[in-house]
Amino acid sequence: MFITVPAPQDEQILKLVPILAHASQILLEEYQNYCAGREFNIDEKDDHSPVTQADLRVNDYLIRQLALLTPDIPVLSEESDHSNRHTWNICWMLDPLDGTKEFIHERDEFTINLSLIQAHQTLFSIIAVPTEQVMYIGYLTELPYKYSFIRESWERYCKYKDTETDAIQVGLSHSSKNPKYQQYIDYIEQETPVIRREAGSAYKFCMMLEGEIDIYPRFHPTSEWDTSAGQGLLESIGGGLLSLDAVPFTYNQRDTVLNDGFIAYRNAENKEIALEALSNVNL
Picture 1 (cartoon, rainbow, N blue to C red):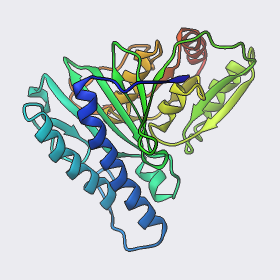
Picture 2 (cartoon, rainbow, N blue to C red; picture 1 turned 60 degrees about the vertical axis):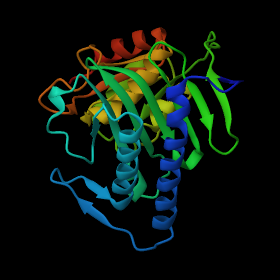
Picture 3 (cartoon, one colour; picture 1 turned 135 degrees about the vertical axis):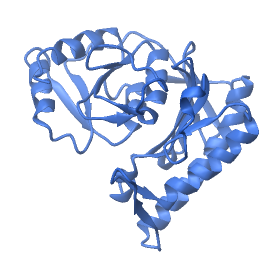
């Protein structure tokens, strides 16, 4: 849960908040124009995934702003050249529109993901949700904040003992049709009822922070910019994100920016359930 608090005094947070808020407004404007049927450009990248004018416009804005804010820190973005990334010990990792397919299908579950990577670890994370006008922001070693653009109000994650529940909330993508997901859920349901929560993109990580998802299994690939910010925020509250070999993801060190599947969990109790179920899935 989140409780109302005064604004933080951290310089990095206070400088990044208006930048991400403006980027969110750009993305929201693009989404509204697209949904209204106005002229809108959608292209296909080399990997056959879609890229829209919204991706590129937000990317250009954030690249410029980050260069002004931290000129000595390069940006590893989905929509920009990062061929020299292995020479970077520290970098920003950016996905200017996580959930492009959600955007195209007129589902409002898309985000902007930004994280700071140093020595292959996520140290600082932001996930902005333009259609809800909020962002989740914080350091790996501190409980995260939630900021409302509209109310200009701050809340902070409050650790508390979860109330007893008779169900596990499992987060799935709208496209999670692989029978492995049902196998995973079936195993958990042998002991505990399961509530399925379908949502797109890194929005599921936000739902985990809000207590609306306990476990998020992913059995198909993602990219590093899809998971870095979410992993950092989950780890900051005592949760985490592990590979299917039960190892935390690290960043900007492999030959590829592609991740294999993962299991994300909200707390230690969920981790135990999540990994036990994983051990009974035919991967």
